[in-house]
Length: 93
Image: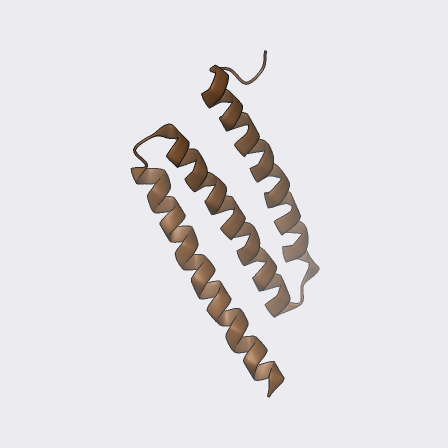
């Protein structure tokens, strides 16, 4: 019984995260300002990372957890670099 509930919850989480990722892509494409696009990109990588984590929970493979860690680190660095670029106009001083 609890295995069925867990499978349904993980499936629902995957669908919800997929929908959130699609809406983040829509924000990236239609954002009126560059700051909105950066926030959409930040949301997209977080939802992608969470989607990998939920898929890893569902499949039991460690590959998805390692990929989620890589996505988290690269997404954070990209967000910081884009924020610095929007603030000062250059990344490396």
